[in-house]
Length: 97
Image 1 (spheres, rainbow, N blue to C red):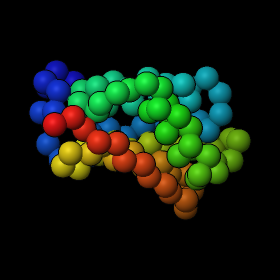
Image 2: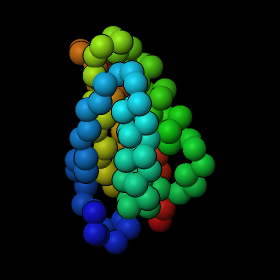
Image 3: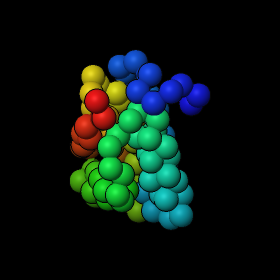
C-alpha cells in the first residue's frame, strides 16, 4: 500500500479470511488498522479492533470455521464486512475529509 492516505478509489480494498479462533484472529485487527490508516480513518483508539470483534460475534462462526473480512472504500467511509457461512454483518467508519 504505497498510495498516499485517501488515494484509494472506491471499491474493494482488501479481503482476508482467518480462523474464527486462535492467535491468527489478532492479525485481522492489525491489518484493519493499517488499511484504515491508509484510507484516512480518524481517531483509531482501539475501536477498530472492537468493531472487528463485534462483527465476528454477529456472524457466529463455528469454533473450527473461518471468518472472512472484506474492507471497502465507499466515498468517505470504510465499510467492513464479516462473513461466515451464510451469515454476514457490516460496520462503517468515517474517513477524514
